[in-house]
Length: 328
Picture 1 (tube, rainbow, N blue to C red):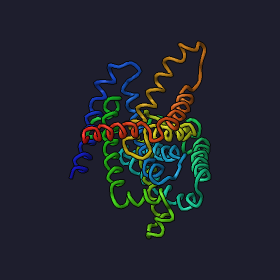
Picture 2: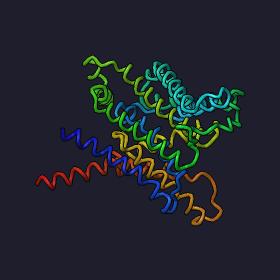
Picture 3: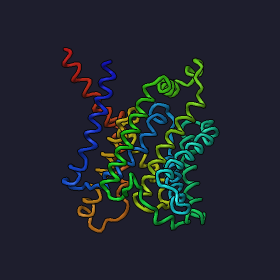
Picture 4: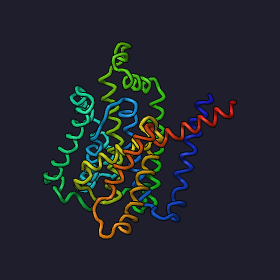
């Protein structure tokens, strides 16, 4: 009962934090509501890596591929066939899940860095194909993607899109957290910790890994769909290698073993990125390029050295210390 109460308290605190974001981000330097939307989208995508990579120990650098599948599917359906954006996003999520389930049958025959390279190749292949096919607009992508409409109102402003993304992030967090706390989630953790022991206990390792891969694909596809209907375009850069690395860095910095790592990681990494964009040109006159690459690298190195469990792990350790002191 106490664990259940603590769990729902965590959800409530997270909900309050999400509702306070507009009031804070409109008053603090470096932050805007568009930045808040990006944080939410990255958190949703990174959340899919918690059961797959954090608990299941399966490294995936192909999240951008599913992010692009979701975005392009919804963009094509809404611009070419006039399909509702919400239905387009749902279709993209289903398609991504099918692709992940089928692809997982072959990918999970390899492990370790071979698996990481295989998922990376998947994303790079899609990036190349989408940049060449006339159906996807080649390098120009798809433009004039309509905004989402809810209850007769357009969700087009940064504020309204943020609330939609925040609602999706909260729902995804509850779903993934509930999954990880269930017998299925404990089986995923067991497979990640000791595949041999899990197999000896009758756990279907292949099915579990493919299922977690499909779940991560669904969350990435939903995020990609929300992105294209917010930005009004889809282009091959959505599937770039830097995008996949960014998702993995966000999850790692926040903490791969807990659902709270994704939003924390998105907040920390994007905050550092925005600070770098604002300060590096002043500190280094004439500097140009993608400062995010430097930020991702530095953040990942520091976390791996000093916070192997991520920012969420630091909070968990401090909370445990406080509880122990109170017990004494």
